[in-house]
Image 1 (cartoon, rainbow, N blue to C red):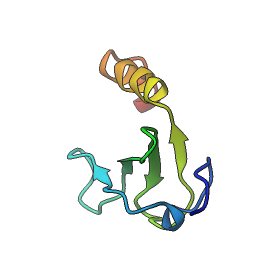
Image 2 (spheres, rainbow, N blue to C red; image 1 turned 90 degrees about the vertical axis):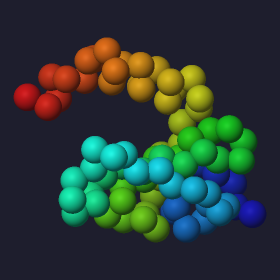
Image 3 (cartoon, rainbow, N blue to C red; image 1 turned 135 degrees about the vertical axis):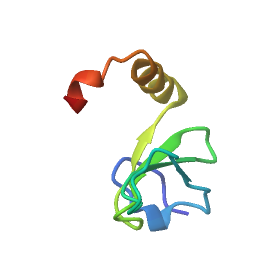
Length: 78
């Protein structure tokens, strides 16, 4: 198996289950997240399902989700 790293093509990952937000638009354009065998998380663009992924640790994803919940990134939507 290929090692998992930032930028690895999603098609090279072991079989994972991708999760799409219920907030995604009707065209399905969104970010998808999958849990990797080692406990990290892969993030991909749904418009390019075989394209590169970004890999995050549990702590990194937790910090992002907490920040999103508390509005840290709201200015990006203005």
